[in-house]
Image 1: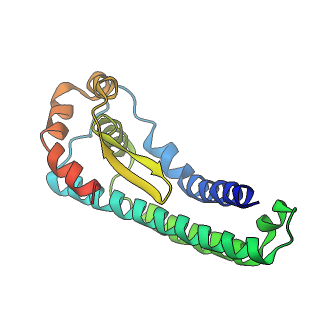
Image 2: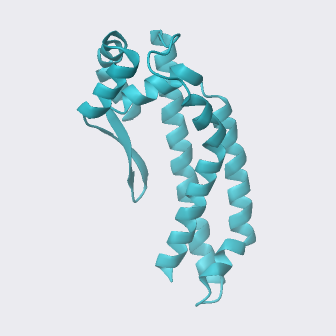
Length: 175
């Protein structure tokens, strides 16, 4: 029963994150190879990294809340009907509240379009947020294929600029 509730909550959590991010993801991933206007300043990078850290912290707090709501729901709801948790008023209210909070966070994303795409693809060569039982945790790890792809699309100068700030990136996202 607990596993089914956990699956329902995890799927609900993923649906909130994905549904809130569709518009931003689509608009941020349209630039083609050699996209113009992707140069960043240190302030823009710092702003984006801070925003990313806050986004993940919000997502992790949402996961913790959904885990707690699911536990309470599992205790209240009849055993043997895991579909009932998806109709639980407390869960639905939490999801609605979280959707609103996540959308507000996405609306504050400091980079859009080609800048966001280029930075995101380059950052993927430095590390990633990895799902752990308590939420997403930043893990620094080089992905040479992702870096090669970023170099092909955005140029070596751009990728080198980002890599020259790798220690700051890892320190900021790993907090």
